[in-house]
Image: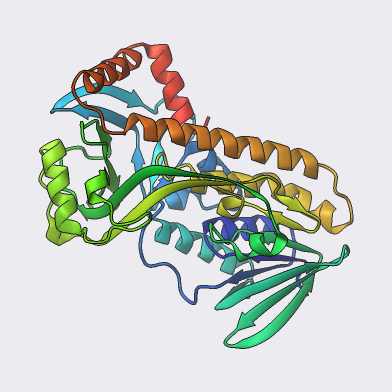
Length: 382
């Protein structure tokens, strides 16, 4: 019989499952999707997350499959305004790793299966949670049939639309932003290699990140005339994205090589509490922040790393350390949300003197070694 149910079999839920299985905890992971996500959305893995991934023996495999980004460039009108090196941010992992989420889930899934072949159950949709003070009953739908699972502890890692969070009645702080983006993955025709490039264009930022397999991700901030809705890119396609990249950066992108296209809006959803009796929220179920800066997935892994050592004691009836865990992770989420707001603000449209002033300020800060190192550490979640 399972001791812990983890709702959600994405990167955060799988990582927590591996941590707990290594500790001898019986785990059941309930994942609504019947198959892994085939497309890459989240790609950035920060040094503290790589350190955390070492705990389950997958960090080196991540690095082998991914692209270490050791430098970021800020450019405008063909000129380099600033360079940011990640060489000093970590002794073991002096880079931000670019690895598509489908590969991330594949590696973590293999690790979980190696620890317990039956731990992950796919095609299971959680419809309710009931905490009686001693146990939690999970109501789920499996192939059209209702099922009930009773366990001492439930941990929700089921993403931004968390059914478990709704069932627990978690209050949220909500904020919606005007920023809209379109991103796509294409064959890499640039000379940037493993560098990340941020183009500070007047009509809004263009971001470019290397991907494995000689591919590159392009992210374009959309203007109001492009807006097809809050979280979609209605009427926009790979051709539009390629044309915008060319117009704002001067770089040609082969629209025909596109393998993923996704439009998204930005909002913040931060849970006011993440501990509810015998139910706990982590990852995007606890905090949805802007993907600009790529901190969301790493933040969820650090939630799991902080929680895992407390679980054996929780199962034994002790709640020692749980209050501190909640306070620390809420603070970390708020800090990440504020950093993402700064990242978005720097990429908003500006023209004329304001654009020139912003770009001069960025160049001036980057030219001061101490300030450059501080920004690099903040960007990499240090």
